[in-house]
Amino acid sequence: MLRYAAIDIGSNAVRLLIADISKNEEGYSFKKNTLVRVPLRLGDDAFLDRRISERKTEDLLKTMLAFKNLMDVYHVSAYLACATSAMREAENGAEIIKKVKELTDVDLQIIEGQREANIIYANHIEANLDIRKSYLYIDVGGGSTELSVFVNRIPIASKSFDIGTIRILDNQDKEETWEEMREWVKENTKSLKNLAGIGTGGNINKLFRMSDEKDGMPLTFLKLKALYNQLNSHSLKERINIFGLNPDRADVIIPACEIYITLLKWTGIKQVYVPKVGLVDGIISLLMEENLKDK
Image 1 (tube, rainbow, N blue to C red):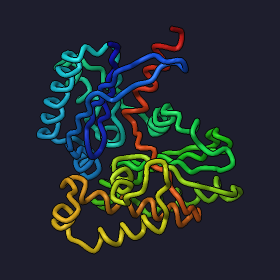
Image 2: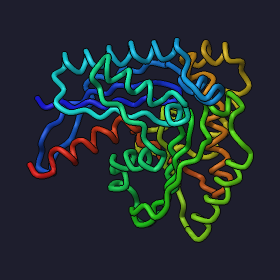
Image 3: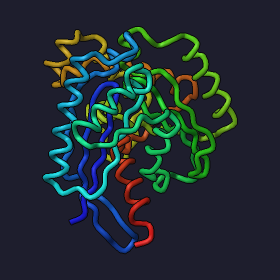
């Protein structure tokens, strides 16, 4: 059995996905075997202090060692490990990468926002898009939001903005970044008719599950707004108890809603499709493209 692994060192959580690769008539596909998520919250250090603390560095090293051991046990033949917004901003990011390599022999790369967006596209969700519609693809993370505009299933523009859920919670989002995002969105969607949204990331996946919408159906702007109002009317503790949210989801889900609602208001989008894929899925797809294209 061929197995690949993806590691995503995010601003909120650190994830490992181990996937089983199989061949079919159309080529190759993958099935998720094991997904491990550890809520390290590296963004709290990176956005406030511009460096990852010793304690969190220690936690990250232990996590990476555990991931390496799991990859060995599962006999993973190829992997890609990416660090995003928090590690991009931490002054000691390069130093941490070196420590990870020394301890675990895992090559960890810090990737830029554009590369992050490109990896998320590797999921090829555009193959299932309605060709008559144009789409604003929104990926909301802890430290950044990646936006892309698809017309006729082709990405015509994309940009990463330093607006994310942890950044907002820590009051590290800047007014001018919001303004820059608004200008970019207006500029790149103003001429598009029939615009719909695509949302990826842990928060929109959770909101979609909470909406009780059927798989494949979109989450409407009105439903998203209602969910936001419902969640926002409760304290953090109540959100954990009433809605069964994990503590590290119960706080970030509010700023995530705010980012989505703001973008939908700016564009007039009424529906968001939630394909339930993220960076780790994109990494596996990318590994398949790179390693299996000639086989």
